[in-house]
Image (cartoon, rainbow, N blue to C red; front, side, top):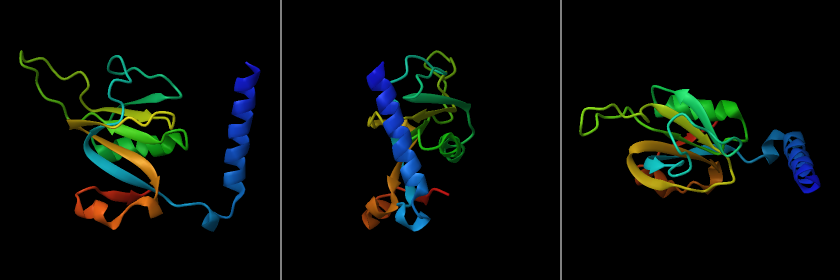
Length: 144
């Protein structure tokens, strides 16, 4: 228990130090968009579930952009998001229970699994995004 308290205190101190730096010293954060990838694959047992601080469920959203906004609103604890897409009917006509679900992911997990129905995004320092990423079809959006 003491080691958890120490780690929490150290994390808070680090965020306080970063927040105290002049804005120019802090790296700009951008989103590396990953259409066709799932940032929470196999990390959530069922639709609508969460395991904070690792996995957040933000509810249903109408788009990947709205889901990205929910992750941004969560603050530095949300390092990536996954929007489950509009969904499709199953083989027997059942609805996709994951449809329009918006999930966030903490920084402790680095999973990114190919999944054509999903759209994910990861926070990265803007200077880490290569010019070739845009040519490869990955959108880059500066976090505001």
